[in-house]
Amino acid sequence: MALDALAGAYAFGAFRRRTRFHGEIAEGRIGDDDALALKPTTYMNDSGRAVGAAMRFHRLEPGAVIVLHDEVDLAAGKVRAKCGGGVAGHNGLRSIRAHIGADFWRVRIGIGHPGERERMTGHVLSDFGAGDRAWLAPVLDAIVDAFPLLLAGDDPAFMSRVALLAPPPGAGGEDSKSPEP
Image 1: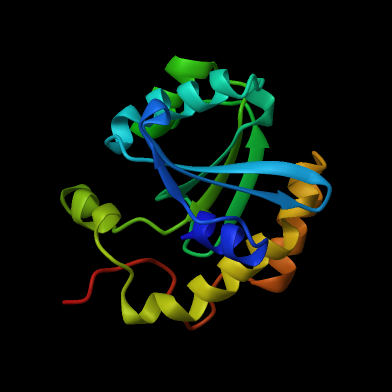
Image 2 (image 1 turned 45 degrees about the vertical axis):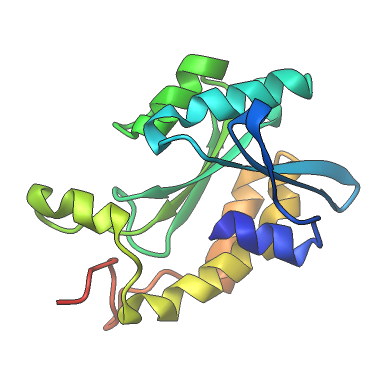
C-alpha cells in the first residue's frame, strides 16, 4: 500500500510484470532522483530473489535499496527507518539480506501485534479492519510527503516528519490492526 501511494503521488508509470525481476516494476522520479518501484511476485519469504535480480540488473548498491514492510513489533501507525540491522524474525527481510547483504534501507510500518501468537498468521495476512482506516491513510500520506528526506539519507528527519503529520493512534483510539470479528 505504501509503495502504491508513493508511485501514485510521484506519477510513476504503470506497474509492468518483469519476469527477469520476479515481480512488477514501475519507474519514476522522486524530486531529482530516478526511482524504480518493485513489487515482488514471489512469496514474501523469497522476495530477496526479486530484489537481488533488480538490484544487479540496474547495478545498484544495497544502500540504494529501500524496503517498505509491515512490522508487528511496532504499534499501529508508527514508522521507523534505518539502514542496515537485523531482520527481527521477518522472513522477507531474511531473504533480502541473504540475496543482497544487510546494508539496505528498511522502512518499518507498524501494524501492531495481535496479542496472541496463534493469531499472528491471520493478523499479518488479513486486510485492515474498519478501525484501522483512521490511522492508515494519514500514515501513507505522511510517508509520501516525507520520502524525499529518506532519499537524502536523513532518516531522523523522515521519521520526525511522518510522526508530525500522522501521530500514531493510542490515546483512546484503536492502536493495533485487528481482524474484524
